[in-house]
Image (cartoon, rainbow, N blue to C red; front, side):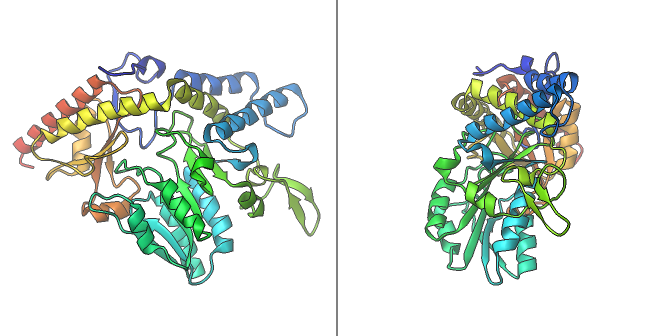
Length: 402
């Protein structure tokens, strides 16, 4: 039996026969998060920091309470948590501010073919403009990043390592703590894409010793339009802001200006107030259930789904040893976009495409794949309906000559 039965907490699932399997793209939103955002707009829908009236104080308090909650969630200090528009925005901030300042001609930046485009393209841009070099960690036969292969590409010219913590396509967990430890012995900065790890595994930036970590709200039950950049205090303080304007300034003169300390110097203008406020109940929801419980539940559902897929002829699974709820597969001879349309007719929502990971698609030698993601609100009944639909799809496309 499923260990969790949480569909009642998610309005889109309540009294619905929807099977939602696209959490790796964006998670669903529980009522507590929706209520928190609604409360902001209904009770104190005003700007933060600059108003001295009561409503502005309430909004500011809620906004900064959310930052404090996130800081504790990842075991960081308050000033090390920067709000951004999303994980992509956070990763770009690091590349453009830290990378453009510190990367020199001939330097090397280590990335991998597992990366989401948001993790590799910003450094591709830095390397091009600085005449530096991108170096890719060779993936093993299963498509994993290993410590051994990381060591093979490490050199005296390596200055930055930018790697995913959990692959958004393969579901593999990178041995990131060991990689960070090795990198730091050579004074190398490590940027971790935590967009897929934050919803699934506990994050402790002090234990990881990550220099930078990015994740987004909408993949972990929170609102869209909000991301988090964690950076070590000394690194953030030494970085230049990318955007200039209101609220990030200290003093403005005709010829020069000074800026606030981190995190505020990176948060110009009106920040994503409602979205940040919605992050707090999202994190509290995850913490109430507990990551051990979430992991056990995901493993139960994923193993059952993989077992079911393996029993169907004409199905290729690219990551049968996935460590999270992500299953990457195809129906042999059927384009994923055709297949996903069939699943949609069964009210089963999953993803088809390259998943913002075209380098990995090239590694797998496919144009696109199907991706099903199981999360805390899925049930064993969802697995059964999913497997039944895959069988029906396989029969349909066989009968029509695919």
